[in-house]
Length: 291
Image (cartoon, rainbow, N blue to C red; front, side, top):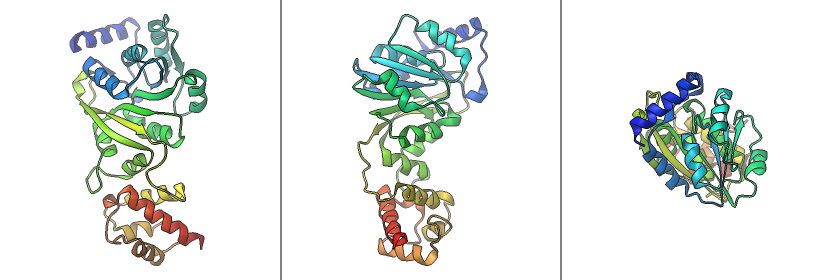
């Protein structure tokens, strides 16, 4: 089925159900099977794999996951779409539809209840633009038993997540994500392959979850405070950025000494530091503040 026919089918299904898409939920439904093919290749599923899908919509991606994976649990916020999804997968007991907000559900319990018997678990989803970062960081920070995350997101966000130090797109979300996962670009997704058409292009990225962080960190909370402070005002030098609240009670003199001891030029800006340098800096700050 080509892109035009899939788009027509999508519109027809929505019309039959009397459904109007909600801009507030960022609802855009994919109509290009080639993109689905690339997502499945990146996910590398199989009969032993379990999948958590976030925001299945009317089930285009869910249909492919049902074929490629052993177990699928799809969490949909819009209760109007639950009857559509339940009808589509009524004869597929390995696909479970859950109505709820992924930001408030107990994800650990959800995975245990529905995918606990799977040898590995992945997240595969077309994420709404407006909640991409909160959802992604929750998946990473809760340290769920995930093997990988394959997500379709706004192209600009994908560029930030896969950026290199020193580039314009490199930011705090880049560094934080890299702490938890290896991030890879999969493919660009043009706006015209969605119904309705969004105003921006999308992209698919893959995150392979690390078994352990690539750096040793004595205080994770401090590391992320340092990262946020370094990027808080991008035009500021590292010395000035960190002297405005990265470490409670520590002033510019202490920050300057720590930067000197770690061999990091205080005139550099946060976007030039690698994860390894942020770890080195936060570890030395941890030592100083404990003494």
